[in-house]
Image 1 (cartoon, each protein chain N blue to C red):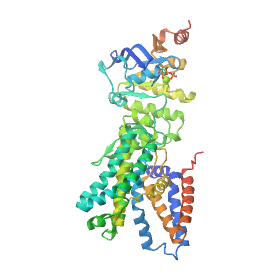
Image 2 (tube, each protein chain N blue to C red):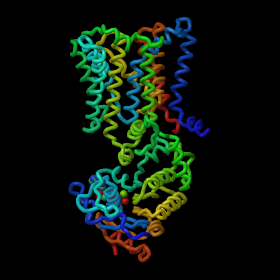
Image 3 (cartoon, protein in one colour):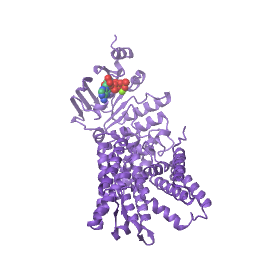
Image 4 (tube, chains in turn brown, cyan):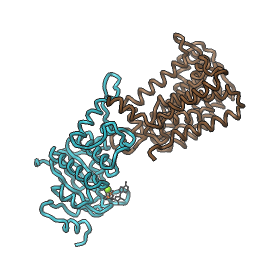
Length: 317
Length: 245
Ligand SMILES: Nc1ncnc2c1ncn2[C@@H]1O[C@H](COP(=O)(O)OP(=O)(O)OP(=O)(O)O)[C@@H](O)[C@H]1O
Ligand SMILES: [Mg+2]
């Protein structure tokens, strides 16, 4: 009983918004786009498949934001990781390609992290700079060319494959969210991330290694972006510098709508999943409505604005 | 009150760059003894507490804890040695529940995966706040939903829970009303009864005279003197603080 009531208390307005928003948009599209096939199993599955990389990035971002940091560079990391992996796969077996892709992501995250945690530079500026830096590196790596990925094991594992009829991208989404949630909510590290974002001084005098937490959250962000890069490369069977380029706004919006505070100390991995699915649904619905691309962008921007405004509204004021 | 020194400070000196914050401070503290540290704003009181708790290291001088020379590299080293601090600017994480604050940095875990044992932390926190009569809605309440007095109660309860030797309190009742102040003072009496050594900073001389066994006066980083509370009065302390006879 006390458990239930404390659960209910924990589910505050900002966290609940994503559930209602999700349902509302889902129902809206289900009714208005019924004839266009929104509700078909194929379309719904498609939404989940398409959002898989963004969801994984969102999980990483929850950690960074909760620790009071931000990562703007994850989109560029996606491209660099995917390209590195694709290049490696041309001459090496699948596991090497995977390790290269993930390793590059974690390494760039560590680069961000060291600058933030130990040189005490603001993560906003550091990752703003590295976003541009690695976007440039992604372009120059293969001279703007896309690199095909022909390794069937790889494209099966990270793209079109299935395990007992469950698409691999769905499995990656579940794994990413499940493990992320477990670490975030149920480990000491997760508690230290929250405390660091909430009150770094209190965390420090309580013996929490605040700098190390900051380094680790940015490495997690980089690693998640690396995995997202692999998922893109697997699904599209190719890597290109444009991968991840347009995900910045969507992922940040997904995370904020999902109940994670921009200034740290509070967040939800499951909320980020719902936020990401919500963004995916929005994309999908606007396309099914046959809107022009420019109109899609305008409507999406407005809806994100409303969603973020509603979820950030402080009910105690 | 036993007669061995829990804390002994000798010739502590602390400078921030060219600014001397503490010069030549010496003090011994016994178990079950309450010493009040008084002085005007900027006298160096908080700095002294931060030196003892390992936040700053002294420029020179010795700190002995239970007769052992110590040189805490950071606040967690002091905590590991039974020294707890209630900071002037409360060191609580506002958006986290009470029980997570109670166990901040020392979270309990269970099982091979070392997952947080939230149920046990919640339960132990509830027992503790019940025992100390800190009245909060529940151990799962979020700190930001509590009143200033309740927060201070949590900070002191945390210190009580973890301290085995020494508790340092920096203006624990500065922001509190009459009833809340009385509660916190009762908590401090309980700490004393548990035979902990207590160093408390306060600007309220009434409180200092209610709680302390001895009073130590600082003025602009200088130690002006130490008096037995029973054998001094407010006038003497005030003139020591201000330097006006
Ligand atoms: N980190 C620091 N760097 C430089 N100077 C400092 C630092 N901390 C404290 N000081 C200086 O040391 C002196 C003592 O400050 P302290 O905070 O110990 O005063 P206090 O007695 O606690 O005052 P209050 O009653 O206002 O809390 C002040 O002059 C302050 O400016
Ligand atoms: Mg002070």
